[in-house]
Image (cartoon, rainbow, N blue to C red; front, side, top):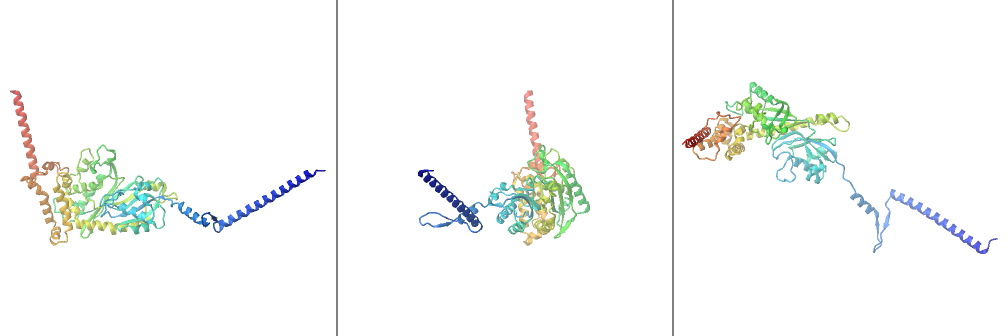
Length: 503
């Protein structure tokens, strides 16, 4: 029999255990109900939390949640892509962009600003173009146009990107399309070859013995001669004389020309034109313009037929640059890239056949009419034919020749609307006589010692267009006379010294 004290103790213990179990069950049920409320709250409205302040105001946690979501929102992921576009280079300082230069506008300035406006790239990437891996396939100089150039960069994928960008671009710059490319793609290094065309009036082939007129029509014999001369560029050669700053020993001066073709002539606004198409792996600065210049010089009879072969040798030959107006980048070739990635199911071939009609329309409606119009108005090729070779050799000696060979012809082109200027320009003989007079005026002045600053000895360095003995003017005569007098004086001094020793 249990004592009263032990019985009371067991009763108390039983009561404690019962109470504890009841509390545990209540807590468990409360926890389950709380979880169910949280699940319901996730499906409907966010919970309301109370924050103690002076007024005991309730603040909804939904505001905090919205703010946090806005801050953590990530920008759309950029993808590596290439953009095909064409442009007329008139009025721009070339293609390449300089973000720090706000004065000289380039083609890339317009293109990058259009991407920023439509949201394809952020402004920070426009300020530092290396952040978007920007790379151009081919750089063009001031005044040079392109039918279809290409750049690679990282941009945000967008629907109707081509349409949106074209709405922000001027009419002389058009974007043709955008394609996703492999992460390793580089528009410059991945390019296998580049095709350029040069549009020039056929009177550039007029023999030097004849009077050059805009009404000149090239004969089949002269056109065939031009094709034969151009074929000497085919293959791999050292083109160090066709650029600036390259030595004969520089390995980068060796370039490979794949094809070169001179098309049949066609007439635009009563002037006959032809198109020279050159395809090569890559080209150096001013290389194509110098190649065109030497073709013209040989066909006209100013330079000898072997000048091209001599230009490949180590001897330095000063070849002038043809005007930039007619030079156009026609097409870029990515044969190796298309073979590797063009049919992998993730990337498209970079042939752009789907926009071929649009590209050709831009060429025929914008680029070629501009070249024809400016050539007829400014007569850039007509002026260059007479003083281009001479200007290239005097540009570092006398500012007078820069005035005669550039400013005067340009001024006459701008003043074409005046009756007497128009009459003079229409008459090619009068135009040639006037320019010939101004170009040779310094020679007359040298004879009278009115312009003694003109370095006459340069007349003996006009190679290959004016070999020694070809020029028989006063300037060469004075130079040869000075040379002869100098040699005579030197011989007299040597004789005096020898006589003094013998004595």
